Amino acid sequence: SCYMLELAFSSGVCSQGGKVILTGPLPTPGVSFVTLNMRAHAGVMISASHNHYEDNGIKIFDGKGNKLPDSIESEIEKMVLDPSLIKAAPGKELGRAERLDEVIGRYIVQVKSCLSPSMSLEGLRIILDCAHGAGYKVAPMIFSELGADVFSIGTNPNGQNINLNVGSLHPQQAALDVTKFKAEIGVCLDGDADRVIIADEKGVILDGDQLMAIIAENLQLQGRLCGGGIVATVMSNLGLERFLGGLGLTLIRTSVGDRYVVEEMRKRGLNVGGEQSGHIILRDYVTTGDALIAALQVLAVLVRKNK
Image (cartoon, rainbow, N blue to C red; front, side, top):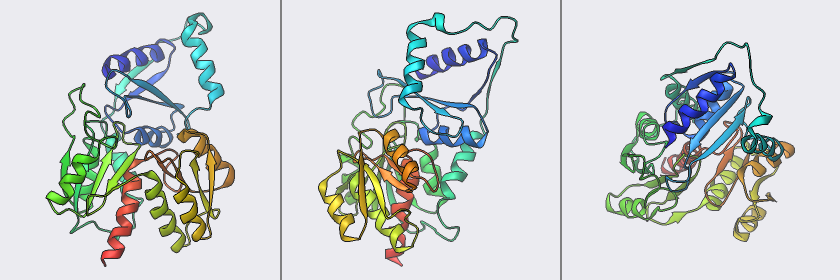
């Protein structure tokens, strides 16, 4: 149903005199990045995210690539329930919609730029589970272009199989494949590629808390962790808090939801945050959770240890 909703949404924007750039399937963080990169006023992601295909959602970003605060979402909801609140646009010329294929390339360059130019994944065997979702095309391209030997699953979306026994919600198959194919790591995305769960070389599944711990420790060693801590939610394990405490770092907790994590990060000037579910926000590179950038940060640690 995403294409139906895409047409309906873009028609509404055009009827108000707006211009729509249609990107086709793109990860949620890709929409956030492209919104800012192209100086658009807003970005819209139509996505089942981590849900079944029946449960489409619409995520809206502001011109800076940030998710909207609750107050603005409430205003939008009022207009959806009462269309009379939407002012007509008489006399305005109709807007237009155009499809821009090059957008995917922009996002791929952005993701790869989070690694040092000298960093290569050559020699690494990776199991990549794309959840039959928005990352099915860009994710294998990114890891392959960085030199990894990629075994992909969940890359055949048919409109109804998103997150169906695959992806970050169901990482068991990827974990099994890691041991079967003697891979170094398994990377599992969710449907819109803003969450990541990882299986290590033994097939042990690592959640968002463990990934944040790995990333925070690595950045601290490099002197790149800002603010002396990270942000997580009330759902994060006490073990994460104790691990960070052992490093002399603090854990700030927020309500559940990555938007609350990002708001707290901005307020405190921190550059690492996320959720146990696998939303990892690295503000040095992106304004929202990005599964691919988070996975590459973990892979960078693996590469350094192997050297």
